[in-house]
Amino acid sequence: MENVGFQPSGEEIERALMDLGPLLGVTIKEEASEELPEAIAGPAPALAPNLNVGSGSAGEGGEAEGEGKPEGEGADSLASPRAGGVARCILCHTPLAHADGTPKLMECLHSACEPCIKAKLDEKLSTNRDFLGASRVTITCPACRLQCQPANMIDQRFVLEKMALEQAGAGAGGAGGGAGEQQCNSCEDPEPATSYCVDCAEFICDSCVSAHQRLKITKDHTIKSKEEAVAELQAAQASARSAQDMFCRDHPQERLSLFCETCDRLTCRDCQLQHHRDHKYQFSTEMAAQARAGIAALLSEVSYKRVLLGSAMKVIRDRQHLIADKKKALVHEITQTVVKLTNAINTRGKQLVLRLNEVCDAKQRTLSEKKDALEQLAAITDHCVDFVNVALQQGSDTAVLYSKRAVCAHLQRIKSRRADIPNPEIPVRISLALDKLPDLVRGQYPPPSRPLLSHPLSY
View 1 (cartoon, rainbow, N blue to C red):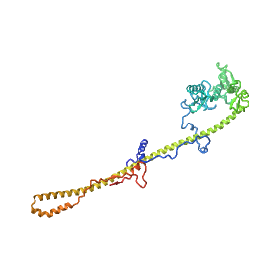
View 2: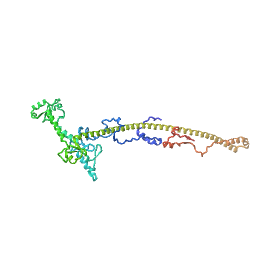
View 3: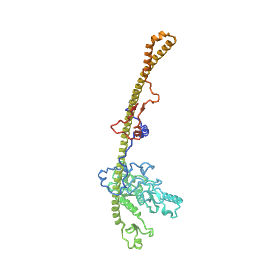
C-alpha cells in the first residue's frame, strides 16, 4: 500500500483500535500491577544505598505550604527560635507579632494566632450538634490537613521569646558581638567605635565624639565608653530573656523552674511539693539537655524517614516516566501492526477478486462456446426445416424421390446431433468460503502455518 509510513494522531489510533480490537484480537497485558508498598514505618536498608534526595525534594509532586502567601514569606516560617523570616498565622497569614492575643502552636507544629483559633472554634461549635461540645471539635490545618484539637494547642513560646529578644535588642546596634568588633554607626567609612551615645543609641568613634561635643544640638548627649555600653546592653538582653521565664498559674510569684518527669510537664517549687510530691523531677536547666538529646534522636529518625519518602517518590516518578515511554513505544508498535494487518487484508482481498475473475471468466468462456455451438446447430436446423417444407409442398414426386436419400440423411444427422443444454435447476456454484471468519472476528487466529485470511473459492 501507499500509506505504510503514515503517522496518525493518538486519538485516531485509539478510535481505530476500539473498532479493530475485536477483529484483530489485540489486547494490552499488564505485566505487574503498580501497587504502592505498605507505609514506611522504619529504616529500609534496601533503599538506603540509593538515597539521593536534594533539599528541594520535599515539595516535588505536591503543593508548597506557603502557596497563596506573599512571595518569600512562608505562612509559618518559624520552626525554631533561630529560624529566619517572619512568623505568620497559618490560617490568616498575618504576622504573629502584629496579631492580637497569644500565638498558639497547633498539634501539627504550625502556628496560628489566637483570634483565628477562637473564630474557627466558634464556627465549629455553631454547626456541631455533639453534646460533648468543644472536646470533640477539631480544627483542620490548611497546610498539612491534619485534625488538631484546640485542647492540645499550647502557647507558641518560640515566637514569644523571639519577639521579646527583638524588642530588647532593638537599640543594641549589634552589641552582641565582641567589644573589639564594634564599628562606628555614624561614619560612612568603617571606623572602630570607642564610645556609645545614649541619646542617639549609636556606637561612635573618637571623631564623632568630638563632633558631638562641638555641635550645639548634641553637646548635651550622654557619652559612655564602648565597654560599659556593651555590658549594659548585654545585661538588658539577658534580663529580657529571663523575663520570658514562665510563671505558675496557681502560684504567680513562682517560676516554672522544675520539670516533673512523671507528669512530663513544667512545675514550680510549690506545685512540686503539693501536687507532685512523690513524682520524679529535675531542674528545668538539667532536664532541658536531656530533652534536647531525646528530641534530636527522634528528629534524626524522622529525618531518615523523610529521606526514605523522598526516595520512594523518586522511584514513583521514574516508573511514571518509564510507563509513559513504554506507552509511546507500544502506540507506535500498535500503529505499525494495524498498518501491516490492513495491508495484508487489502492484498488478500485483491487476490480473492482476481481469483473470482478467473473463475467467472472461465465459466463465461465455456458457456459462450456452448452458445456458439447451439446457435450453429439452430441455423442448420432452421435451413433444413425450411428446405424440406418447401420441397414437400412444391416439389414433384420425381424430385422428392430423387432427393429422398440426401434429404433423409441430412435430417438424420441433425436429429442425431447432440445439443449440450445446461440444466436450469442446477444453481451457479460460485461462492466465498468464510468458514474461518467467525474465529478471526473473535480474535482466534489460525495456526501460524495457515494464512491469516483464507477464503478459497469453490465452484
